[in-house]
Image 1 (cartoon, helix red, strand yellow):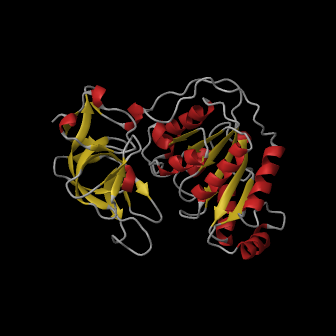
Image 2 (spheres, rainbow, N blue to C red):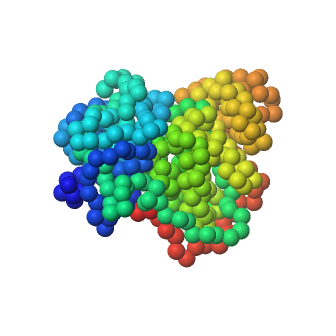
Image 3 (cartoon, one colour):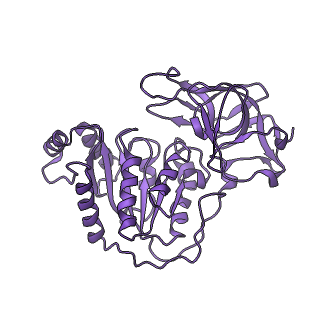
Length: 371
């Protein structure tokens, strides 16, 4: 069956026009990153899909979509996996729609009930039509990732925003940081190197003023819940894409909780530690801050500069008292994330690292679409 006969919605994790590839649909054994055509049986907690042109489409039973085989290990939403030996795919094989709007497909491990009161996204159920093949074999996301332009000299400084859990306000805080820095005249590129492939966070970064946004999907990965070696091979491209824009600062938002999803693998990339201006870690509570301190030391990352900040749902005064009691009175932290406090923190950070809008400007800056 030819792909163009399906009229399928193409998920945002497949960031290329597939027409020139002359794709066919056939069975086979699928692995992480393989593109798959499926038909929705039950939408579950998924009401829409965002396509590779960043347009939103409603989804109901019978909708045909192009998704990607992937692991998802969310702490709040549905989770599932692709077996290490691969997943046999034949027409009619029943699978789970794990990744909500991003079209991640796999074998279900756990899902909340649809329509639950906690806002947890339930998995949908789909049936396979088949894997997408080109003339060279199965189509995998890794084939759609381009090589970044080689650049000389040291890269821009990085401000890393991390968290002790999902839904603690990392993306909201990252957006506020980007707005402050861009209003100060700095060119900021945003990077989301970990988590489950999607586009919502990168869109939020660009809407806040980032001149470009890149994520692990641009590097050929559907999610960072994968083997560390595989992750490391692909993710090295991410900061290369950012440097093509000659930024004054790169804002890095790490997905999920800091202790999982290859966040530590990213932070251990060669030459990265010397570029990190700070790791601003949003904590759900003081115990989380204590855990981050222990985890970074255990992971060989205890040398990184870290500033702790309370989640927006927590009492900042008691958070400060507890963190100082547990980690010492000199522990860098934000007493709250109010505008005045955040502004003072960023002003001090840019001054300390001499971050000014003086870097050479690129004459042409590629975007994150179509990589």
